[in-house]
Amino acid sequence: MGVACAGIGLALYPILRKYNEGLAIGSVGFRIIEGVVDIVGALGYVALLALSQEFVKAGAPESSYFQTADVLINTGTGWLTNWAMLLTWCIGALMYYSVFYQYRLVPRWLTVWGLVGITLTIIGALLVLFHLIPGFGTVQMVLNLPIFLQEMVLAVWLIAKGVNPSAVASLSAKTATNELLSAA
Image 1 (cartoon, rainbow, N blue to C red):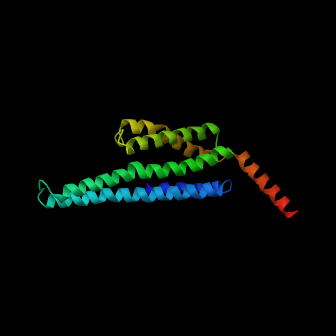
Image 2 (image 1 turned 135 degrees about the vertical axis):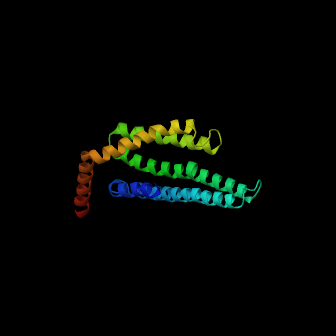
Image 3 (image 1 turned 90 degrees about the vertical axis):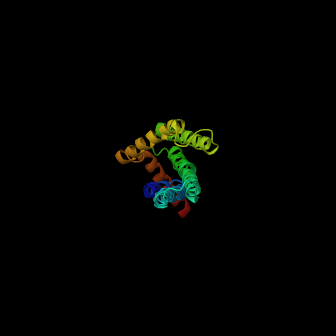
């Protein structure tokens, strides 16, 4: 999943940079950070597997450093997957949704849905961070549902229809005008 997350940012970069290079680079950067955080979080689960195997080999002692290590790994992995990854994903997504909205690259209803969904996901992540709701609990999942659905619709939209041709034509006309004015 980490590689796919970074790949989304990289795939959108050539389109977004034509409209706003700063937000395009930011979006790619945050999606790459998200991918790295996701991979590190997955490695935490691998570490838990190795720890549990060592615990069994040690004869399952009642109180040991295994339990402390378990708590540390679980806490770190939970923080990475439920806060750091969501935060970096949300920032990257906010960047590309703002370009989509500003330049009307996809229909406004789809972009607004994305912005609302990202906002709800940020709220859910903050509620988890401050221990007001459990991580990956019902409330957080309900808050994440709109963006989950929207991202699927956006993916299908971009595959089936691509970006708005009139937005691309408008950018081409502005670029040509700017080139003519700078040549004169």
